[in-house]
Image 1 (tube, rainbow, N blue to C red):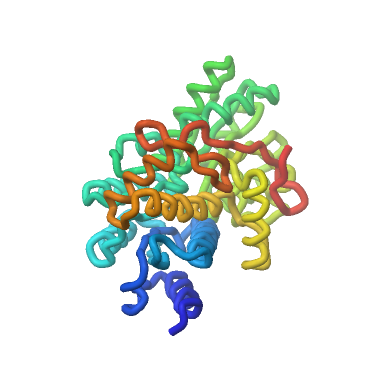
Image 2 (cartoon, helix red, strand yellow; image 1 turned 60 degrees about the horizontal axis):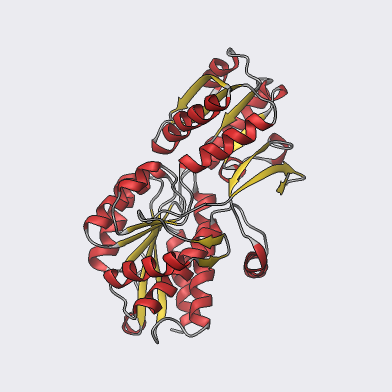
Length: 373
C-alpha cells in the first residue's frame, strides 16, 4: 500500500472512531506520534479541524525528508468527548503503539486525566487546546502551545471593560475550563472596577438552556459573556435570541468554539476573543496550504496549534537526535528555550513547559465568518 493511500485510509478510519494501527512495513521505517481528539460528540467540528491541521503538518514534514531519516506516522484516536474513552486511548498509544508523544485532547476536563496518565508513564504530552491553569501541575513531560486561562481571562477582562461594560453576567460549562473562566474572569474584571452580577455553570448535553438563560437575564447586565462547546453553544445562541436577550451585547470567550456549529443568523454581529490563529508570513502560507488541501478555510483557531505541535515535535526529535520520549522532552525544552517559529507566532516555554506570552485576537462574526475588529 502506498504511503499516501495509507494516510488517507488512517484518516478515514479515525473519523469513524476506530483505531488506526500503522502498516507493519511502514512502522519499521517510521517514528510514530499519537493524537487524541474529539472526532465525535459536541466538539466534533473542532476535533476534525484540529485533525486536518495535524495531518497537514505530518505530510509536510514527510515531504521534506521526514525526521532522522524516517517518516512520521500519525495514530489518531477518538476521545468521543469522554474522559474515560480518552484515557483508554492514551493507554493504547502509550503501551501498545509505544509513541513517544501524544497531542491533545481539546477539553480541559478530558485533557487533565489523560495527560496525568501520560506524564506518569513518561510519555510527552503536547497540549494544543486546553486552557485550565491546572495544566501547570502536570509535570515535566507536559508542554502547552496554547495559552492558559490566567492569560485569557486578563485579555477578556480588559477587552470587555474597554468597551465600557461595567456589569456582566457569565454562562460557561461546569467543568475545569468553565470554572477557571468564571472565577478567573470575575477576578480580573472586578480588579478593573467592573462587577460580575451573576454566573451560571451549565451542565453539558442538555437539549435546552432556557432556565439558565432566564436566570442570567434577571441580573440585567450591560453584557453577557459566554463560552460553550460547539453543539451546546448552538443551543445557547438560538435560545438567547428567541428569549430576546440579544438586545444586550453577547461576548464569546474563544469565538471559534462558540460559533463553530451555530447557524450564521444566530451569531451575526457577535464579538469576542480568540486564541491567536495563523500569524505573519508563515501563517499566511499555512492558511493557503490548508485551504488548497480542504477546499475551505479554518473552522477554528485550534488547527494551527495542531500543525505547530507536529512541526515542533519534528524539530525536537531532530534537535535531540533520538526518538524516545526522553529525547522528545529534551528536544522540546531546547527548541522552546530558543523560541520556535510557529504559524501561531513564536513559541517559547517557561520553566513549567507553558507558552510564554500566548497570542489572543479580538474578533467579530460578520458576513458568515470571523473577522478582526
